[in-house]
Length: 255
Image (cartoon, rainbow, N blue to C red; front, side, top):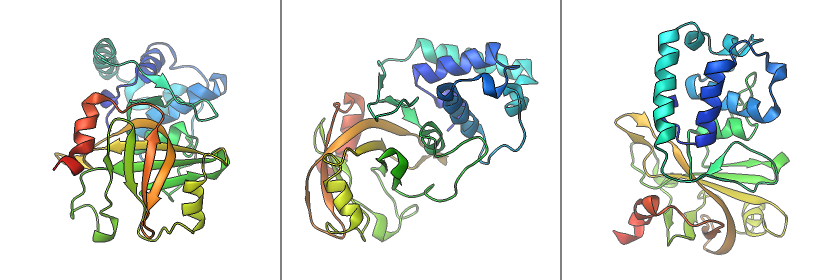
């Protein structure tokens, strides 16, 4: 995901301010919240941790060393900010995060916002899984691709995921997850255990050989399930799915 693909107003404002005013700021002077966004920006551009840094400009040397590049990025981001056509809402996860409802994010940005990645550490596990359980945050994060092809998915991972309507979402677990397994029980009882379920959905994995971002459709609650290995779970979203995304999210059942 490129920087110009970002559609979160708060994230865009952060990047604009960073490029205009914060090149010489030391990392220890930045709040924990802003450091999460800084990490999100870093992993928007790079795929490995940074080894040595002190100031912000140390992290983004290529940008800060070239005024023309920096000005072009600022121009694009200012245009995008002026043309955002929805109001983003904060997520209720029990902790503050720079992720917002109905905004689009790359997987690396999501991991950064949830402290799974830091500037110095990028765990290799969980990067390609459909669900990652963040035990310390009592949170399960779902990464859902609606239209799956044999090119990108094996037959055992061609799950049936689709929106039933603007509030209900049908999701199929991994083929090894049973209703009596620790994972299945965690899903079923998440609400009573104070845990949260967070869904990110995209229509395609790639378009024109470019990885597509996930739309944050927010937190959800268990409603019911059928089957076992895999489980077919119906989740109720805490916020309605955006109308512009609902049509593509329902196409699996509309035909």
